[in-house]
Image 1: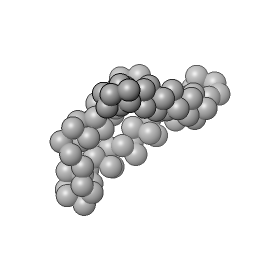
Image 2: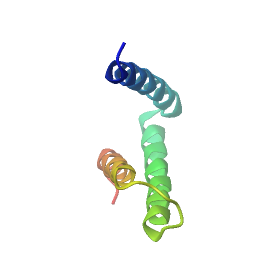
Image 3: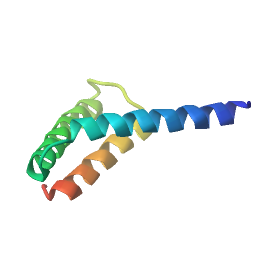
Image 4: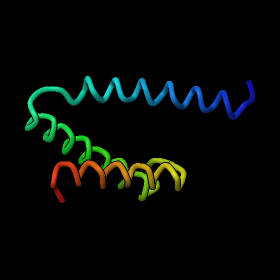
Amino acid sequence: MGRSAIVSVVSEELRAVAAEALSAAFSGPPAQRLADAAAVADHLERVLVAVESGEVSATAAEALRIEGAILALRAITGSR
């Protein structure tokens, strides 16, 4: 198995683990799930501020992923 095939298999396994963890974390009634998603967005915004200020190091791609996650969570929750 080549390196790209291994990376692909590992990526799929990580996605499955992440999906399972998210499913467990965002359980309960819809209002609670939306509140949890908004709380995660708030936390990620604090992380992004720390990255942008240089307090926490991250690659440009990582910062963009965090920003994308924030935008997606805000779209789902209908908040800022």
